[in-house]
Image (cartoon, rainbow, N blue to C red; front, side, top):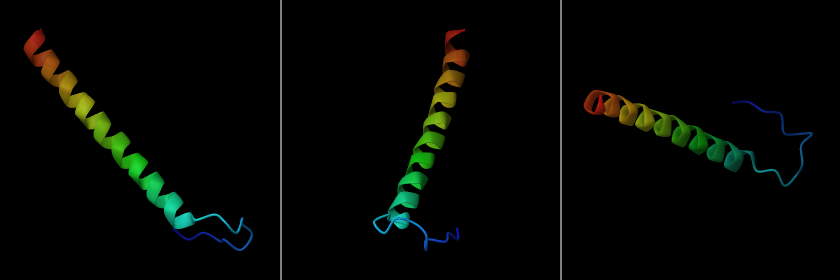
Length: 47
């Protein structure tokens, strides 16, 4: 991703920000997949 940092705050660490964002998205995706699998298994074995 290309971002122009010439007009930004000097203390902003974009690499750390994007790494944190990427990690959050990965946790959200994996969490959604796990919940979907749990719900599918509940539907298969409890109904």
